[in-house]
Length: 368
Image 1 (cartoon, rainbow, N blue to C red):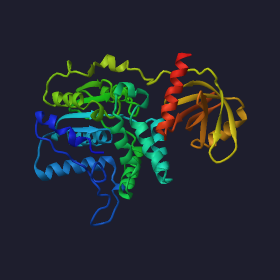
Image 2: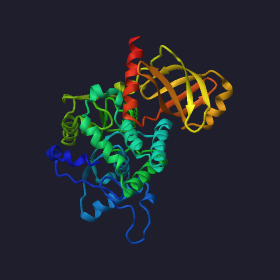
Image 3: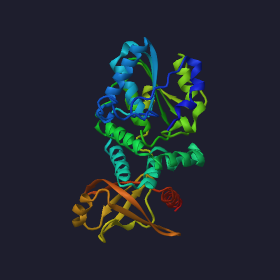
Image 4: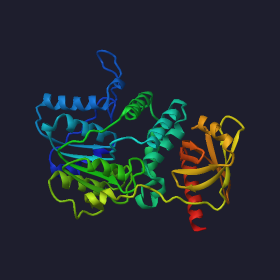
């Protein structure tokens, strides 16, 4: 996913640019040490950030500003924490200090799909996690960009699959992202549903010398949806200029950051709440009532509490049945929490068609 190379031109305003793909990351296909044969999977993200510092020592660069997006933000922040003397400024986008359970479950599910060789579903699922499908009317991500992104994922080579697994497992093992002391800009898409705006803000609030901004009408991939605005924000910060009056940018002070809405989507009650969960490998069904629903998940009540153990034992094998004027359809689920009080469920979202249908279903419920 080579989005950086299209961003370089604007960044030149702030100085020379070095693009670095560390082993098993970005466009770097190296996943084995050529001398020892060891897998890059033994390198944690902090090890990669140390490599970055060692490389700068070797080439004799004594001061840099560093920029990292998403996975790269962990490497960038770790590098700035390890080698503060090398850092002038830092830009992070799509960062969180600690991973949440629902986020880890989605990553684990993508690994399950890949290992089961369900690559069409895998490609669609990864995009539906990264791109906020519920806000496409706001982000206006082009169908062509979405399709190319999907094909790239669905057609992973064996090496790319191994790289994806290595990087997912690095993130799943991650317990804390260190905070640096340098001048830091943390940015997030206004509608980021993968690393939520409040998670980015919570990270930024730990930084002593920081600025924070939302990129309007973008999600986890602003560099695809709002490239000009995103790169103008980064360049302006790197040049030491004010980010307060930039088009398409929503700067926030500490008080505003503390009050960012933590719930991404309105939870909607449905007209006909009685429905069921079915199991993908058996005939067992679980009668439930929908308390509320969003594009990303649902809260259910069990009709029969004696089925609670069954639900708990099959967290990724159940599907929720819904009905609209087109007929019945179902969405595969990840059970996030199962108690006598209710079931909190994430939708797997391995199909663009089902995602579109769910969006229409929710819009109709809002109008009732």
